[in-house]
Image: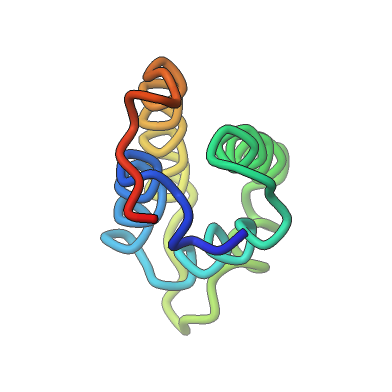
Length: 102
């Protein structure tokens, strides 16, 4: 699937939140959509990716961010926890109650 196929709620919860932090983080979540079958699958895989990143924060930061000034562990931890919380809220919205552009 493509990010255009995500619900408005999912797009805002993950991609917009990531973009406000750093475009490189948005790219990681955007690429993830290509491996997903639907909105719920994307949310699950995004959550799994956050858990994976949390297991080795320094490595994750180095792998994700191409900027010369990479974010610190604390700010990266805060943003992935924020996105994780947003994901949980979207998961609690029934799929037929979410808004889709397509």
